[in-house]
Structures are given as structure tokens and as C-alpha cells.
Length: 269
Picture (cartoon, helix red, strand yellow):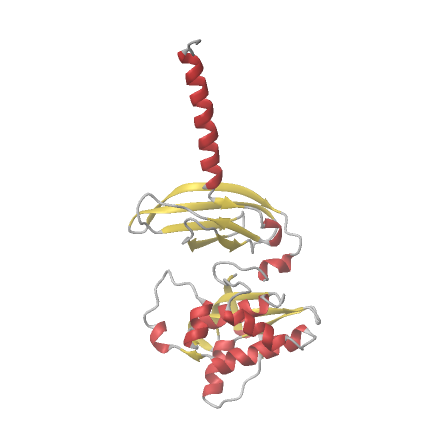
């Protein structure tokens, strides 16, 4: 039997190791760009020890920072800054408020329809067809024809069903992200919850809905509400389900559509 020379064994080992390393790298890829045409990008990261992880979505004009909870599974984030070049970064907490960049990529977003960004399931408006609250949206709109009819039906449901959670607002965590299934079970929430539920239900019916954070002349402090696109009328309208829900519980009058002038957006998702 012929002896296999050591250099040959080393080459074979190197090739096998390279193939394994490539497979592992592909398996644990930190970014998913498969949905950029629909206006979202995925990220995930497994730290060596439990740490706070953040991801940043930025272009030349602005940047959005998020806590990143995705480890094995991807979390998806909106490319709401429009088409063009983005840098997606992942940061790992070092100590206090200090972070270091651990992963980054540049990606060119060629979004087919800008409205798709606000139909997608993302971290802040996270939904899927199997959720009870999403099935409820289907029930409410089953026999309705126009987008406006569907918006009104879902709006009335949210305003009637949920109550404002005053205890929650006083104990909110800075890492908080709405869980619309839990909110549906509890039947209460803060403005962030109301706007996430409303947006998710509308998006599930293919109606573009933004979750907006900012300030309103009608509400004290930082607030969240929605902007909804009516395809039939080719326009965005402002809807504040939190404000209207509180008014309704107090038997006060209100209108679904709000004046844009009374709302100043700081962030949109």
C-alpha cells in the first residue's frame, strides 16, 4: 500500500476545513438581504456572553438605532429612508453606554414599491397570519370592498377594544417593543402598543400603515400614532387610536382623521 505524503494530508485537511468554515459562515450569516426589494433588511447576532446588542440602519441622510434581539433567527427592520445605499451595523455593549461595532455591511436598496415598506412585518410592527389579532383583522374586513371601509372597521375595533394602561407607561423599559399578541390578550396598552396593533392589522390587509413617534398638540410628552395610506384616495391620513380610545371611554366626541398640523413626526417605522 502506498503511503500518503504529509503535504497531501495537509492540503486535504485545509480544503475540508475551508469548506466547513464556509458552510458555518453561511449558516450564521448576520444579515439577510433577500427582502430589500420589499423594503426590509434582516439582522441577527450571537454574542459570546449575554450582552445588549444594537443594530443601526443608516444612509447618508439619517440613521435609526434598534435593540437587536435576534440570535438564531433574523429580526427585520424597515428601509424607510428610501432607495439607495445603506450601511447596516451591529454593535455589542462594552460597558455602560459604550458599544463597539462587531459586524457591518453595505447594501443597495432597490425598492420596487415604496409603500411596501409600510406593509411589511418588522420589529416594531411584528405580525404574521397565524396570530389571533391578525385573524381578527381578516374577520372584520371580510365583506368590505374599499380600503377606507377596512380602515374604519379596524379603527373602530381598536378604539372600542383596548384601554390605556397607565401603570405600564410609568414602568416602561427602554428596550420595550410591542408584542401585539399579548396586547390583544390583555386588551390594554400604551400609545406605542395601540399604534403597533393598528398598523399590524392594517398591513395584514395590504393597507400601508406607518407607526409614527413624535409629538402632538393633543397629547403631553412623546407619543405614537399612525399614518395610513388610502389607495382609493391616493393620500396619507393621520389616525390616533390611543387618543380616540381615551376620549371614547370618557364619552367625548372625536373624529378618526386628525389634522396633520397637530402632529410632528420624529421617527417613522
